[in-house]
Amino acid sequence: MNLHGKTAIITGGSRGLGKAIALCLAQEGVNIGITGRNEETLKNVVHEIEKFGVRVAYATFDISKETEVKSGFSQLIHDLGEVNILINNAGIGNFGKLDEMPSQTWEQVIQTNLFGVYYAAQCIYPHLKELGEGDIINIASTAGLKGGAGMSAYAASKAAVISLSQSMMAEWRKNNIRVITLTPSTIATDMSIDGGLTDGNPEKVLQPEDFAEWVRDILKMNRRALIANGSIFSTNP
Image (cartoon, rainbow, N blue to C red; front, side, top):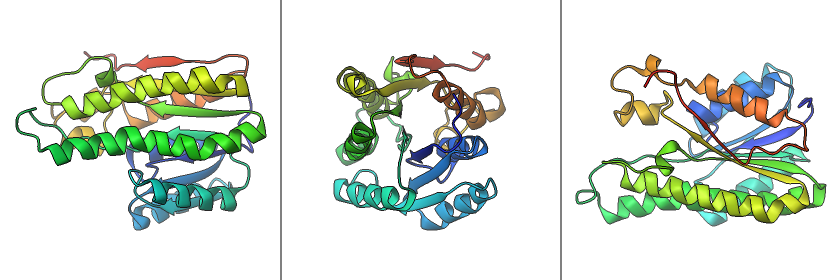
């Protein structure tokens, strides 16, 4: 499928994975809306996207706050018009042992990584339903498939995202909305590097551009095809 002229909202689009996806889709002629908590970094990405000649807008809000998400999405839909694609990318990773991580930190991870996906999907669903088609890509993690030491909160949040996303797919595909759950392994983003997940060698793992190209190719598939779940790993173990 040709993506030119489509419009995508990407949460957490100011850096890392979200930024890579935004730039990759913009090269295909997709109009872009990005969200994040830092207005300055959002503006910097907007300037990069503008070079591709597409419409672009941003909204600054905390994805874990429902009222802020509703306001931000309303603004983006107003600025961009018809929206066809939602990429639920925003998330945080706080890592530590179960008996050492404060409960407030645990709750913050769940609120951001799980409720953020729920809030954003709830905002875009009525719009896509009225449009008669659309795509929602929820980015989880292989950590959600199998928890590990030191990542209880993050792994639990991503496992919940996988389940939530599968429920979305089961309910919303009748409206011609493709809901896709992606579970990447370690990607060289600030979160994984700062969290010590790349073993000091970020070039060895997946790069944001690798994942962005995969997202682009999935979206270009004929609408009769639905990738319900997918995982991607680096070739290096």
